[in-house]
Amino acid sequence: MSAQQLAAEPTGIPGLVLFRLPVHGDNRGWFKENWQREKMVAAGLPDFGPVQNNISFNDAVGTTRGIHAEPWDKFISVASGRVFGAWVDLREGDSFGKVFTAELDPATAIFVPRGVGNAYQTLAPNTAYTYLVNDHWRPDAAYTFLNLADETAAIDWPIPLDSAELSDKDRAHPRLQQVAPIPPQRTLVLGANGQLGRALRRVLPTAHFVGRAELDLADPASIDGWDWRSYDTVINAAAYTKVDEAETAQGRRDAWAANVTGVAALVKACTTHRSTLVHVSSDYVFDGTEAVHTENEPFSPLGVYGQTKAAGDALVATVPAHYIVRTSWVIGEGNNFVRVMASLADRGVNPSVVADQIGRLTFTDDLALGILHLIRSAAPYGTYNLTGDGGPRSWADYARAIFTARGADPARITPITTAEYTAGKPTAPRPLGSVLDLGKISATGFNAGTVDGRIAEYAAGLSQQ
Ligand SMILES: NC(=O)c1ccc[n+]([C@@H]2O[C@H](COP(=O)([O-])OP(=O)(O)OC[C@H]3O[C@@H](n4cnc5c(N)ncnc54)[C@H](OP(=O)(O)O)[C@@H]3O)[C@@H](O)[C@H]2O)c1
Image (cartoon, rainbow, N blue to C red):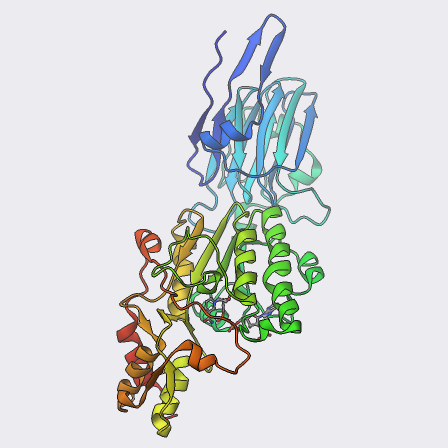
């Protein structure tokens, strides 16, 4: 007897996927690969990372269990016998209350995403119903229940429920009107009070924002002790960002603790809980000798901060679902370069500004929108450069644009070299070339727009400094 091909079939409920399994029979009985990650993922099964296998054995025909939605994904089949399965979407959204039914035998399996209610009725004696789940069962796990006899779901049970074998608990479950739809998992944002964190608050109002006081990257115990189960996405906007202080004895330790050891703990948590990790990288992972940096350029950091950011990136790249968003010259709320130059312009100060570092500014609002775009558009995982667009400029060029926007004479800026600017100061080495190639993120449909117009508008809009 030739076995059917492995195949996935949609069901009308988002994420609920029926699988046809090849079952090889001969004179001795049959054999099947009940779960085979490589082939099944290729066929359309999410790479859902099972950690527990359960079997429920049912003596009698008509044994009926459900309807239970559990806080994990399930992959269900039967090892012997046959069941009538019924699934009801209990997740918030348009599909709430939608029903799918199918018979499962050893040649059929179904992937049930978390939040979809699951029930079955045995159609043969001695039915062994088996399922893999991607979290360990725990007594405090939150289940959502629906009554098997719910009139809205109106499941057409092959064996009427009044002559079926049910538990008292299952008889007592609520009707659909009484069921609170299961909300989607949340997004967690670390670094809530930083420049990027504050911009992310504007575009992700329902996310859970935490600052260092709640979740300290430099304290792995604080990460280990966090409940990561309720998040499907983690955005790490936190980092040790004091570039010059990172070169000191204490700064070196602090930078490594937050940007590497802390990120390693975050990587472990996101990998274990299958969350998408969004992490923010820097032009400082390069020595700046290339005129334009692509995402594939090998790391060549000059200073401690850049070294820790590069090490963090290497760790984050091991998370199956990750976005590393590499940016440069970030302008957000607070005492940023534009504000400083506007203030100097207004106060009649004539500054010397570095003219041999070339790059592009990035407004945090654009960075936040770009991060949202990658997540929402389900762009392929990986590293993406994300900065403002337009002709690369030096800090002195930007300073002149800011002076002009403030109605001050741009000739008041004296261009100097990085070597002149840092002479005699305890500063970190800086890459001279910080221009990041934007082709990859543009191809996904995102462009932050040119900096020149934005900088003029932003600088002109600042109140008198
Ligand atoms: N700023 C730039 O020009 C630039 C350029 C390229 C890349 N980046 C990257 O962009 C990301 C966002 O930077 P940003 O400009 O928004 O930086 P930021 O304003 O300095 O914000 C960083 C945030 O991280 C927090 N933080 C520091 N150590 C922490 C720890 N151990 N645990 C938890 N939180 C901690 C800080 O909190 P405290 O205030 O309590 O220290 C701060 O709120 C970072 O990954 C940075 O490396 C920045």
